[in-house]
Structures are given as structure tokens and as C-alpha cells.
Image: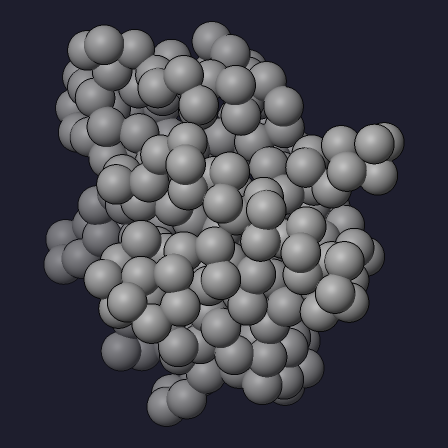
Length: 258
């Protein structure tokens, strides 16, 4: 029983659910998850609604990760993006896109994080121009998001991102309730494959609910029992996510290098 409870806590600590506006409060399953170890939530709202949602999450978990797609693009630098995100209560920018010039990616990531907001750079595909991700890793980017199919690919995550680029921070999955994922693997199966591949934090979209979370828990338990998903892989993922969460509470912490 203790082993099953420990596994459930590990799984919860590697999930990032999504919340919309909080006119009716946070969904019960997200509230319970935050109490059990879920590290925070991605906020799908803007302006005052985004701030209210972030505040609702932090009422339950004061040091929660609160992710947001944030501003990014022409005319927005890292300093401006950090200020805009902090106004919404966000401490994790989930929408940092690589610039055509790799050194510009480094500057944006550095400016954003110096001003207290963790950057999640992506989408990482495992192919094509990898220099922006190498620059981001060198700048100490706190998170990198992977698209599908890279989210489910060990060669892409463990081989290229961890191995070739030497990235040691958090890898965030693509949103796993996208139709391409649901139709191909189902959310629970995709979550397990992503953890096996080396992803740390599974991002669930607004369409996910308590049933999806429970199904992921069950799928992870089966994969562990079958020997497909080592518990130490989940422990490694949970540790990286915990470090990101601590950094978001105290951005002066050094970046992870391995």
C-alpha cells in the first residue's frame, strides 16, 4: 500500500493540469491534486481572469508553478515578457519560441529569467536547427517543451536533448489531450511513453478532467509493474520538477547543468 501511495504521489508531482477562468473556482480534482503533490497548473486565461486563476492555485499551494503561454514575438523582449507575465501571476512562460538567430534566443531566455520568470523553450522536435536549443541550454533555460512525436521519443529526448545538447533541466510534454495524441495512443498511454522517453512534466489540456488523471495513474502503475517504466525514472522527473518549482519561488537559484 505504501508503494502504491508513493507511486501515486510521484505521478501527481509530474503532471501539469490546465485551468481556465475561475468564476466557479478550481475544479475539485485539481484542488485535490495540488494537495497531493501536483506542482501547479497552466493557466488558459488572460488579464484579470489569468491573475485570479493563478491566485486560486497559489491559495492552495503558495509556491506553485503557474504557467502561461505569455507574450512573445516582434516588439516583446524578455524583460517586457517577464513584466507582463508577472502581472498575471505566472512564473513559467510556456510559450517561448526560438528566434531565427540563436543568440537572440539566449538573450530572451536570460532576460526573462533574470526578471524572475522561468522560460520553457520550444517546441523541440529533435531534428532541424538545434542551435537555438543549445543556446537556450547554455543560458540555463529552466524548461524545454517537446512536440509530438518528440515527446514520445527516447532518441529525441534522451539521445539528442539530454545527450548531444547536454540539457539537464525540465522537459515538458506537448499538451497530451490534442487529437493527434488521443487518437494515436490515448492520454494515459502517451503519458507513460513520454516518461519512458525522458519527459519530466506531463502537460494536460483544459479538456482533461479527473478521469484522465485517474487513468494516467492506473497506466503508470501497470507500466511500473510490467517493468516498462522504472520508478527511478519517475523519481528523476519529480526531482527536476521540484527544482523548477523551487527556482520559481527563488529565481536566484543556479540553473541545472545535468
